[in-house]
Image (tube, rainbow, N blue to C red; front, side, top):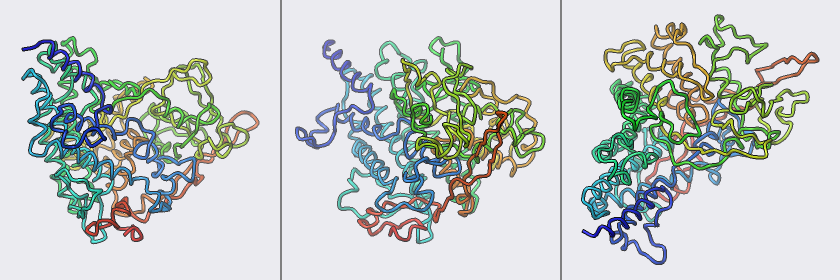
Length: 606
């Protein structure tokens, strides 16, 4: 065996595999044709690598923070932005903000189908050493199934809904390597069949993938480091397929997509979410810290670090880019930024008080004349409010003080085009070590946390409550109440202690299944705000448009002569005018494929 050849090939593939986007184009590029694909292992590998390229790597997009501007969580500063138009029923067929996702999802699915067709990808020889070659082949085969499931789930989440024919429909299921932009005429499969396809692909992937990319799980790390372990942290793994199943089942179980309230769907969501939780707690977490490779072992009380792509609570975190996109989005013009969107008063009101009670409860101690005093810790790590400071590295050293009052404050609504319209700014995702008034600007890494510990806790608690209620731990080995306590006591993103373990409000709402469900919806809103999830949550939870079309409010602060403030927290900033609970099937696809059925409420998009 030629050792030199092995080393050269190993080094080449190490460089190739270290990136998710810089792969050779597997399709015609002038010098190569598609027929060359199966002659070049690096191009076969590129089929899978390219599937990662369209997954968002931050929250500054229409499937991240901007999507919250189409909900009651936030308001876009610009009234011409697509999300603002969507929320007010004004988007046109020529300005569909979701059009590109349809194309991107199907392009990725075509890549997977090409790899999977006749198992040609799996049969390809990638490395000379049989054992190493097996590691690569199995991983790529698993990734093909898993990423296809991910993109199928994305299609279903965005475009699934009740068609104009009255049926719950998903997307056209495609498992052959066809280019749907060419001369094809596809019909949408039923919502149920789309769920089954996603689950099937997740289960197929699970048979091939390592449970997770962790060095301590690799038996022969010294020889296998280039092909397994933490080097592949940002790639999809086995435990992520359980997470995809959990969220897919959760949506399928929700009222809008489960008219007969099939409890088995809730159960499947709970079971899969619990599998992920168990992995984090018992394999990836404190139960195995004797292993020296587990210095970064998961701990459920550890705070989320949005600028750490290797955050131990992550389940699937994307590749990162070093940039200040989120800081530029969220800080106002006075701090040399854009103030692109602002948190709503409705979201601010969702945060409770430091004793755990909601602000609507007389026992909370909430004072509407001093609305930001003694709020729960998560509020202060998420929202910038009037007269608060942005402290350098979350210390008392002020980088910036927010002056949101209407009578002279530099950050007041309408003062400039770079100021929020709601009287609030957003702290979540912001790296507090970046000071725009400093000569040296410390720009950090940003990723998107596609799945993290909190997402699975929320999914499990919601589903388990529907099956056995809030306090029953016998079926799953954990109660919904105990699960949600993990999140309420977790440290905040700025390192502050969470709510106390003694939580009388949690004890109280856990006595009633319906009240606990409402409580969980609020917990989910707080935990996932600006991650692009509430848009879909509001739809799956409701069966009418009433909740979607409530007005969105902001805060009007007035500075008094003595330096105190008077607050009006009832101002309507923007109305919501939804005529459909669903997004439209792209208009040009409707024109091109006669078998497609449009979602209800989009009559002019047929």
